[in-house]
Length: 354
Ligand SMILES: [Zn+2]
Ligand SMILES: [Zn+2]
Image 1 (cartoon, helix red, strand yellow):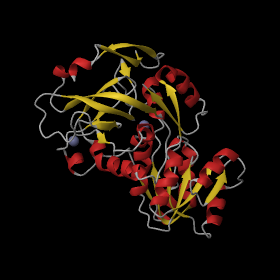
Image 2 (cartoon, rainbow, N blue to C red):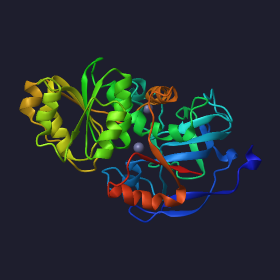
Image 3 (cartoon, rainbow, N blue to C red):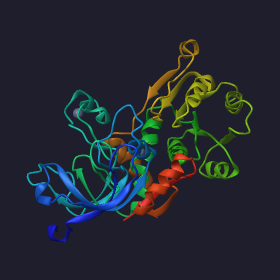
Image 4 (spheres, rainbow, N blue to C red):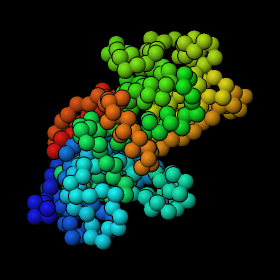
């Protein structure tokens, strides 16, 4: 197949942190240059995540590589595999997904414990290695996620980051069937998928967001209650009223604002679990120590997902149980997409096509 691979590709390149994106021609790594374990994908589409904006701006405590091709929720076809790759779980022609965790060693303490995303030598798509905002992507056979036959690539794209992230947070939220789970930002990219994954696990979602449009979206997707944070006089009291006075069993907080986290400690019932998922660069978590202890609250950080989480999140979506609401655009619109995200104007998810 190598003769069909062109010399160059269109890519969205961030030349240095904070600089404007340049859409330009970039050399494609030749199949014979791939290291063992690497594969080359011809991309079909890629989602755009808020993290990509952080990577481009360089406003996180950990720096991204530069120049950088961002993107970490893409779907493509395997068109080359590095020579001497042993036991590849994927083969030429397979349709696979690229997620935030591009590669991990699989042998360190974190990997052995299933926290591959915390691997001491983890590679991150669109951050430490070039990501999916290009027509071809070099990825890693052990970590690409097979996309089941018949599952639309565009529908799959955002499951690979937004979907996996909320799926894992809900999976580890220490909840049981019938428990209440609060989802601040439920009408957004992560939130609207969180409602659906929560329903799959038999949970009772309480959506927090604002506006008639998001209220309808959340209720249509299966939320049992909606709290409009612009209209509510007391979100904590509202959550308690909905849950019979006791509070919710868990909250999956994906927002960047610290108040979302502080509030959760107040509206969780005793024994409840706060899953912290958002990645604001600088904000601190100011929970009441007294009530965290007095109410036996667990505060857990949940960071994207490992290979198994990706398989499960994709499988559930492929079976039609979770659907990502997205709008399809061209790669060349990325700059305006970032602008919309920075202004909080993007509803659902944007998926770029090649
Ligand atoms: Zn992401
Ligand atoms: Zn490792």
